[in-house]
Length: 248
View 1: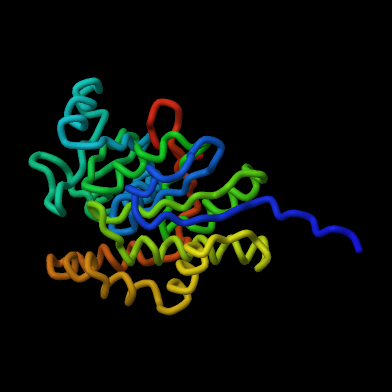
View 2: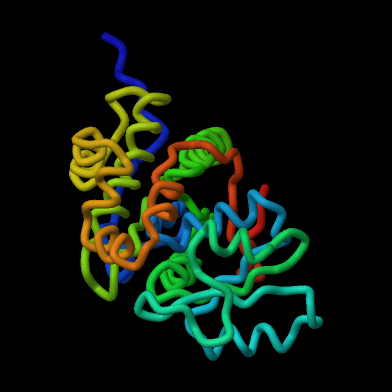
């Protein structure tokens, strides 16, 4: 009997950005998720004409980055502990698009998502993923990185596990399984994320999780509904060598 041909990918999920400290990133492909709302906002911004998104680790770094750009060429956007930073544009997808991002660079700082993106920068390639662009990112990664381990990184919230990010990770795992089959080398965490994804519809799941309830209480249910859309944007945002996220 002929030996089975090894499958090209291993797929693992990290439940929090803090877990990046436990894995070797070199040679891996990282898909970073902060569904409510950092990566959903980044995906929306580059899909609607932003030149790039620069993920800043905090407000001071964002302001310092802004000082290096010509007036009118950029947008400062972001939040800390779910509060929009003073003088910054809103951090959520629809509000930022209404503010205007076309043909400008977005300098973006958030409590968790932009930190996760910077933390994953040691990987071979880093992509901003969301429900919004799940299929586009998965198809690109499977076509481009055929022999790489795929590490799906959930941002979480200040060291805590967030259900909406794990749900988004499960959607990506489900898409990978759809393309590669059930014999793909999924870790137990990847299988658990997929089971969560299959347990409920996106909007209801996002609205009813802890962060979703908090955002709904602030009148942001329309933003949650937007972020809950699956694969409506065919954009693949990648972190480049200059730590800018640009659409491929």
